[in-house]
Length: 417
Image 1 (cartoon, helix red, strand yellow):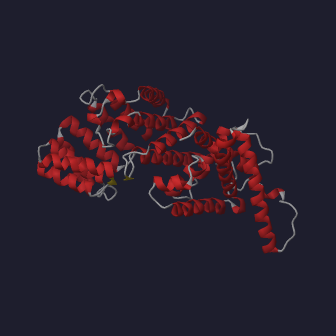
Image 2 (cartoon, one colour; image 1 turned 30 degrees about the horizontal axis):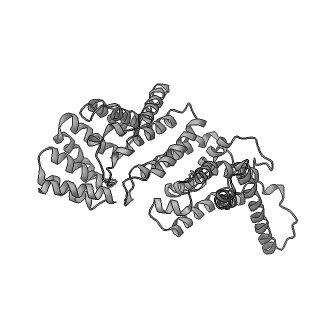
Image 3 (tube, rainbow, N blue to C red; image 1 turned 90 degrees about the vertical axis):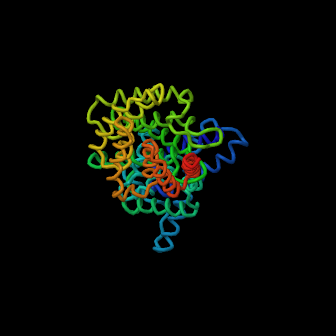
């Protein structure tokens, strides 16, 4: 990614936030900002950066938005056959201003995150809108990340913007933080969306590569932004810590050919020591502050893995205990699956296999490749080669990610040899 592209991605939420705050009209402002970014991507590499790139973008986006609003006004004039010479003040979003520099850029970005995670949107729409409006990704990039055509993603984002607009009258919701009664719930949605974006980047559900580092980095960048604005929220800190501690292993997760390398076999010298130190410090500070949430517990588990000097030195009993805490907080079958692995590492594969039986009847994970892959691994540990082979074959048939398929087929071939 070029320096100009990096700068535009960094400025995207600031510019969009400033334009929406001044004029309202989230949907039209987003279109105007995208046109400003496109103009910058074309002109800046050729002419050089302007003295104030952010102001340049806001100016261009504001001019384009004015054109769009005039066009919209003309359309309404024709439809309503009412002559109007200018937009009335009432067209501004409640709380907006025409000159507007009350809030900081970071505040605007956080408000955009909350707006994109509006409860009326589906999780898929929340993710798409967040990546577009706050992350600065193009519709084509988002479509590629989730393996859908650009036209499909365009329709999804358009519907999401229309839904937000409909929920707040003709201008959409006011550009401000949600009221206190909604803030906690909406923050939960914001963190969940960032968590899903990171997970898709860390372990892609489909495609030719194991991971999408661009999505993982974007999730971390946005989580840093939320943490900057809400530094005392322990779950925000926990989520950022979890991302950093997990992403720290990224370089070691694949070999030179892009093949998956399981954690036990990874070259730990390739793990990012700075990210690990930052993640450990974040979760260590967050845990004593108040109620413990699932992101903090997951971060604590990740820290135990990252701080172990070798796979054999991993504190599995402590990890088992933390997964049991996590199971009390969240009814999540993936947590139960990871708990079964940890139990097997402490008490032997038979104990872990026994816990998998309950997951066979859980429709949320019964057909997930991870359940079959874990069963294959535990059966192999127990010496049941034929059972392990069957489970690996079943797992390979249930994943659309090519490196995961290759890894599972390699396990089958090794058992056949």
